[in-house]
Image (cartoon, rainbow, N blue to C red; front, side, top):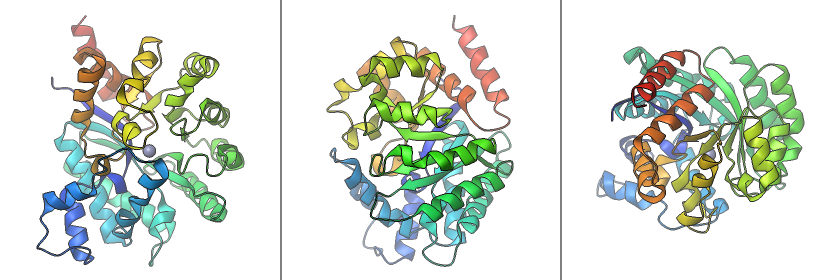
Length: 336
Ligand SMILES: [Zn+2]
C-alpha cells in the first residue's frame, strides 16, 4: 500500500547507499575496479549475530570514507534521495560529528556539510521533510571525549532551528554509565533541544529508566525496558515513543533470537512503537524489508504498519511533519 513512510532512527554512516559506499571505497583505494558494487555491499553486511562492540568496529571503515565536506554532502544527499525513492517522506538522519574530524573538518563543518546535503534533497523534492540528530559518543572509559561531547551539545544548541532537530547518545551503551552524561543532557534540555537516547539496546531496563530521567522524549531501541514491568509501565505511562530496529537488534545479538524480540508484547501492551532500520547498509535491509519481517514473524498487518508510521510522524522532532500526520490519520480512518 502506498503511504508516506517515516524513518526516525538511521545512522548516516551505517546507512550509506550501496552505490555511494562503492564509489567512496574506490576513491579511497580500499578496493579496485575488479570488485563489483554488489559483492562489496554483501561483504560488508553483518551476516551473523555478533556483540554490539564487534558491530561498532564495522563503522571504522564507513567513517574513514566520510572525512571531507564533499564526502559528507554526498552521503547525506544520496541517502536522502534513496529514502525518497523508497517512499520515505519524513526522515531524521543521525550522525556523530566528532567522528568526522580526522582530517580538516571541525564538528561544525561536519554538521554544515550534512545540512547542505540534506537541503539539496529537500530542494529537489519539496515534499520531503528531513532533520538531523547529532550524536554524542559513548566510547568507554579508555577514551576521553568529554570535550568532544560537550562541543556536540553546544552545536546542537547552535543549530537548533537550522536543521538539527535533536541530540542523541550513541556508541557502546554501558561502556560508560549512561548516567555519566546527565549534565550534558541537562544543558541541552535547558536550551530546549529535543533528546533521544540509545538505551535498553544492550543494557538492562534501568538504563531506559535513567534515559527517561535525563529528558529523553524518545528512546532508541528501549527493548530491554520490557525486562522490567515497572520500567515498561513507566515508558507507557509517560507515552515515550520507542525507535525499534528489529533486524539490527538480532544482528547485534541484543536478543537471543527473533522469537525473543519483545516487539509484539510492546505493541499489545500499548507502547508507542516506531519502526526504523538503524544501519541499512550494515544490516542489509531496507525499511520495506523490516515491514515484511514484521508481517512474517510477528503477524503485524498493513494497518499496524501504518499506525507505526503515524506514531513515528507524531514523535518526529522535525518541523512541517503535520502534512504527513494528516495523510496517515486519514488513511487509518478510511480503513476503519
Ligand atoms: Zn542506533
